[in-house]
Length: 407
Image 1 (cartoon, rainbow, N blue to C red):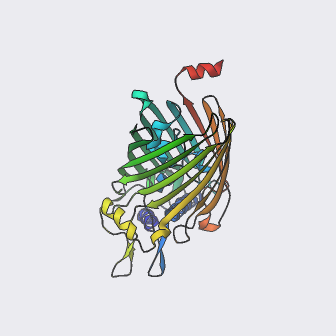
Image 2: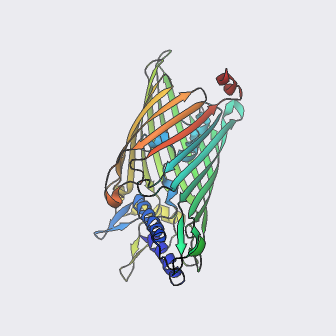
Image 3: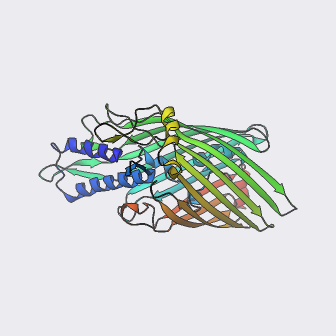
């Protein structure tokens, strides 16, 4: 795995001056390596000349589902009804949000069965404006903490602590083009600091990149009577399309550019019951590694745009496409039950897992809970297995919504 090899090389360069003699430092390095392995596997693999070759990118935390509603539905989100987390899934949905303002916060433990201090925190929000509220601005912050690493010298004396961290910050704008169609764009700044403290020397440097999302969304509702209706929605989004990221002066790595297409169908049976089913398919826009004359595999030296087009000629073909299927049931728009399934081919990461969750809505407050059913073993075990995630959302039209709640 190219990214893991680079991390190992960084620490190897430090070993002559820093001896990891206590077990806490060794555990820290093992955790960092296991994260790289898990994330690299999550990016997928492909068969080249009969050999399975990992398809990896830098900053894979950008592809971790950040909210519990979609997390409970098998990670679908491109075309389902908009809330504040649309900033991640498809910013174009926001002009069709039922409320004028929204804020969301989610905390996600990562590898919680192994270590207690690795987590993803996601905060997002939006505000609608313009004629008939046909436009929206939005923003989000994604912060991935990889825990702490304690360093010691050759005699076992502590010489500092490393704190690997990654984050991204987004700003988005979306606009409704017609009664049924909208579009939106987001700009993203990404920062990744993997080797910090005593390990940050030599040619290593924190990496930075800029990227953007472009989304489109179509939705149409058919009213059957006063209480019964159906709605069909389609969405498509290109995300994380931007510059490469560099951790040294000698190489630059792709970030996880992705093409996603989604569809959702909602059927409101009466004044009390509503059900939604949704399907997303996703494909990384990253070229597969190629073999050089020495038999080594490396990513082709292509531009980001050229690499995105090259990804469609990958020898693995449709095996590089992952699929998510989810369902959601609401009772009186107050209580929700959700379930979903995520699928990848065995040559594309081999992640297959079931999800479930519940949601509660009370006036402007929403609480969503998601659980990923344990599956797989060893490095094929999902880092979120046996993990409960929580999201808290606030959706409101204006300040009077809070006043009504207080009454």
